[in-house]
Every structure is written in C-alpha cells, then in structure tokens.
Length: 262
Image (cartoon, rainbow, N blue to C red; front, side, top):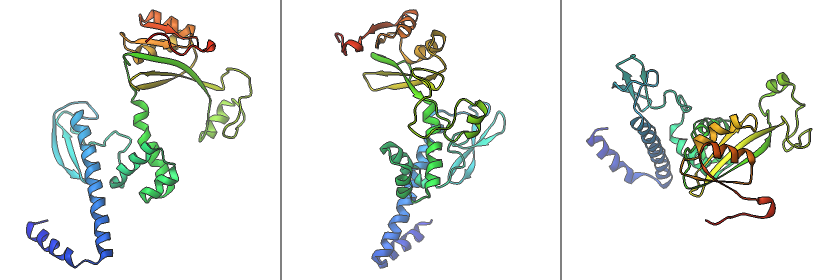
C-alpha cells in the first residue's frame, strides 16, 4: 500500500462504528498473528541454513509464496521454503499457529483448543499431532549435574491401529484403563527409561527389553560423562553406569531412603 492510500485509510477509521472497529481490530489482530508466526518460521531457516535435499548451503532467494520466502539451491536446483520437509508443511491458517502452540503449552483439551482457535475439533486434533511430531523426536542430551534415572512400564496401546492389533494377534481389544491379561511384567507392557536432572531437563527412551545392550546406548546419550547418576538400586542401571564410567549412587527406596548427602 502506498503512503497516500494509507493516509486515506487512516482518515476513514474516524467514521467507523463501534462494531466496525471491532471487526477491524479482529482483522488487524489476525494479520499480526500471521506476521509473528511467519517470523518464527523464517527464523528456523536462519538458524540451520541448508537445502533439505542435499544439505548444501549455496542458496539464493527465489521469490515468495504464501507469504514465505522461497529459496533455490545452487547445488541441486531444488526450490523450498522454511517449512519444506517439516511436519507443518502445507498446513493452512498460519495466523492460528501460535494459538495452537499456546493451547499445547496450557494442556487444553482438543475441544477447548478448537473453540479458542475457531476451528473444527477434527482440525484441532490433526494440528495437535502435527505440532507434536517434531518435539517428540527432540530430546535433551548429555544431562549434567545430578541426574536421576528409573524405568517405568505402561500398557501397550494399539489405539487407532486396529489392523495392526489384528495382524499381531497379541490380545483382544480392551477399553481405556484396562488391565493386562498376565500378572507382573510381560510383553503387554512397554518399557520406558526416564532420565531427569536437577535443572529440570528430562528425556525418555522406549526400549524393547530391559537388558544391557538396549539400555547402554540411550543412557550414554542421556547422561554426561561428568554427571552423577542416581537410581533406585537397579542392578541393570548400576552395571551400565559402571561400564560407562559414570559416577553412580543407588538409593534404597524400598527402605524409605530418598536422599543421600548432596
């Protein structure tokens, strides 16, 4: 818009009715949200510049599309933008993305998130899975200081995977909150290793079985070499920590011991 046109538009705002002002403010707010989301998206490419296909850094600007700067790789000739190859590629209504991120941060349900963004609940459901695809793979590594590790087990779920459940013939379908068919630990449970330090950094790993070959690689990535690892007396974690040359302290939680020194 030219300066003269902007001046005329500003003069017309004085003639707006209260309801028209509300409509104008809503439109301006949507535009500001779009600009903010676009700025966040563009900042991603500036942090890790490179072609999504060949990882080359010889890039040139190649116009714009849908409000995003497009680039062309001088190495392979591919054109792309900051969303290419990400879970948010080709996702519409960018002006509502920050609201979706805020709804996830507040832990809102799908229906409440849909009401806040003004979209259908199925759209909010799809967006939630799109937004969680990337953070699910980004985990803290090399936790320093005092780190605590423990294993937890959850019932294996085939929700939304009816064909897989029938193919594996592992069990009959059960309702949410059901119980395992066998007592104790079995193939019906999924093993998850959780590591957290005093700074609040947390990471987790889904393991196939509880043995040294499965536990060693994730624990080596999760805990820094100079960290102090605390566990609940697990022989497996103690053995892995000793082989990785990590200082280890076992706390006997069965006897009520929660702390030991610092």
